[in-house]
Length: 346
Image (tube, rainbow, N blue to C red; front, side, top):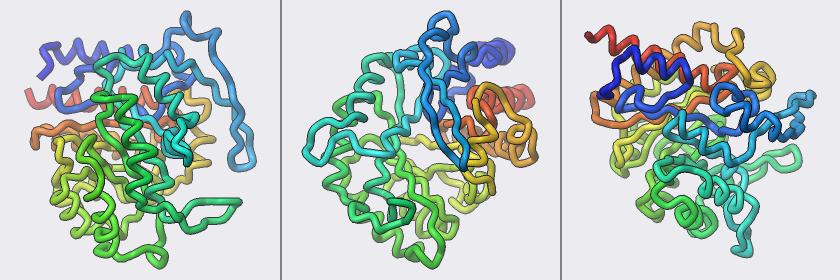
């Protein structure tokens, strides 16, 4: 347990410093360079005049995203202990000719500016784990699905070369599938097993399946046997975290005794609506943060933290702006709830 008093930890949390809240919990976020976090995570005097902008079209609207430079990752890790990088989801690090692509250079820039004790979770490219991909407005079969050799050559090995021991895990996220369009739970396990048994043993793999009908006993038994982690995701069409915990047999399955929970979007709310509601990500938004399911999300994450403690595991809490309006404030709510529980135990 941290040697700091609970009150000292509360004071740190109120200043958005989440390091050392609980020895079995690491706080982090999904992506990091948000201009809306100036004054919370990033010192305005250092970055206010170095914010870049880009336009993003979504749901018939155009939004302006403000971003601080990559070097701000050094400031990020003064507040957090883990960072999920998700731009790697959209393309591998090496191109088909084995030459470094744009993501290779961006990730290398992160590595250059991150401290030596930084911990990263990278999202594996959808190219290798999505059954279908959206192309020209339609979903088509993904010909690279579960291509282990190409995955290792164009992503896994170069990621390790860039980050080394700071690469703590890789998240394999699979898209939502209707029952009629997906294999049975047993068939799904057989297909995934062939892929994961050929991958290097490190870093730890964590799997996020977004189809509730695949989250059955054969899947969780397989995860446990192979030492693969289940991502407890709070997302549009997944059951609440507490139900995922019950379905898993109340076990954490990753071989390195870590678990990941990703707090992404409110349940039953699509990405575009959550994004538009949360934008510009500067503060909590009541339509997201002051709902019954938001309260349950905080309580479920807190309960999962203490389940990790009871199993001598480490929980990585990855907060997203879209779930709350502002990811640092969502982490603050969870951290205070964990500290409430610690005080109650006394």
